[in-house]
Length: 396
Image (cartoon, rainbow, N blue to C red; front, side, top):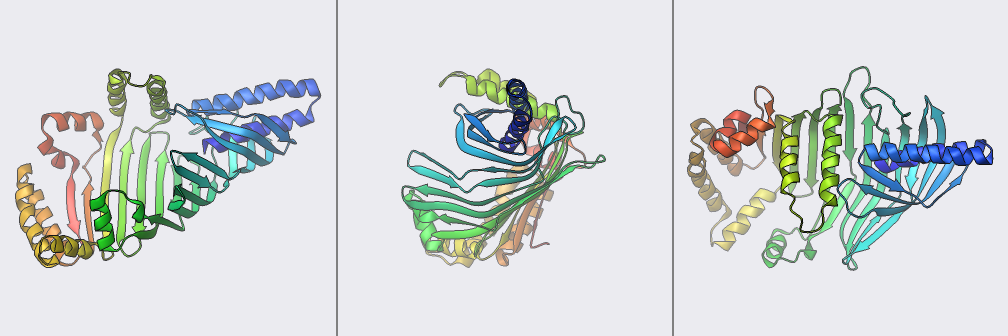
């Protein structure tokens, strides 16, 4: 996203370069390049390039390298193409921003990416106002393929990543979503003997599935809602997560980026305790609104029960009954009879007929992170009550 924004500014710069006399073009080059670097730096990303070619509406940034906040070394991504560039209210609109195919190898692992394509990117003018006036935005993007290889074997691949973003307008929150057509993972490459044994016994040497994400962000008050984060694995199940935060404002994001820069600048082995304490202080600006984690079973549970049962010379049903008997004793340590009864009922219901199991936390009002941190240190057993923790099974 930040890469695209940078390319956007550079594209605008190239436009000016080709429409003005030579000397003026060089002056404009400096101005636009400086503005581009400043805009990206404000978003925690350093960018550089080795050259620019093309004309005022279509150009290529050559040898682009980026370094996000917190990273010690820049990543070279190669040429970035900007197409359909036009000036807009002192800033720039770019119809399409696309990278070249990328391959990066380190320590025997090779990452390969197809061209990443971004549509309808906006680079704001300097000093622009509004909910996201200082940020570069885009409306959609896609990545056809990503592959990770270990030696000569494909450990992971993903196809058909698509991102959609609706910028905030008329006081409404920004909406975002992301989906993949399919991912594949080769679990035969797992080294740990016990894990490898379990993977083979369960029949998950090679897995496939998809990812689906959706949410909203209101930059005015920093309310962030991740309404969907689903990872579905074929013939296993779907793990879904949600969360809601308050206080995730632009000022918070900038402070977090500055903190990451300071920590990255520390030499290896340096004492980062001061930065760690500052990070904890920064997190206290956030508030907790809600969270949940849910698993929808697609045969995984019974496979695991049978596998564990064989290890102990028992049946899967026997293991399930043992688990149901143990849960009340484990929950009793929380000294929360209501939650203990709820968890015991839900786990028993799920193990008898595995469909879905969900743990949620939804307090009646937002809880500041400072209160959560204080409670975790002074009286952690009260946290489930503070956060409104609930457990349910086999419910839509």
